[in-house]
Amino acid sequence: MNENNEYETNLPKWKIEETHPSLVEPLKNILKEVYDPELHLSVIDLGLIRDVLIGESEAQITMILTSPFCPYAPMLMESVKQKAENVINKPINVSIGTEYWTPSMIAEDQRMDWGLY
Image 1: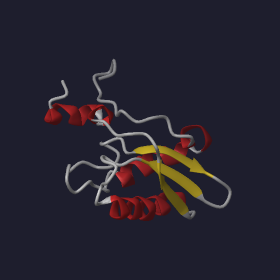
Image 2: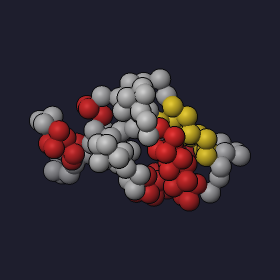
Image 3: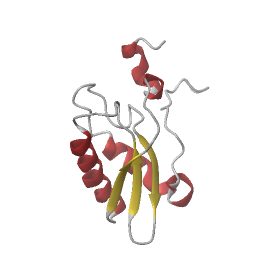
């Protein structure tokens, strides 16, 4: 929690926070609709969206998976792409980053359910 007793998410800083700050909250909100079917948390709450960069002709979203052999990877990537295109209004390229997911990346307000406190 921060000093205002509000929960914070454990998200990395996205490049669009500096280049397109007005798109950050709408993008987070729409990507909260994309759920991991096994863990029952959104890609935002799980901390899977690691970076968002908007270029001249397209946007790049880098995400990670909860496991290297996640059977839901194609579905999650396609859902992220479709939802993000509704906010960014450009073609989206979704790629998988090299970082490994850990439960410590779960949003602060979801951690208690995982016994992380």
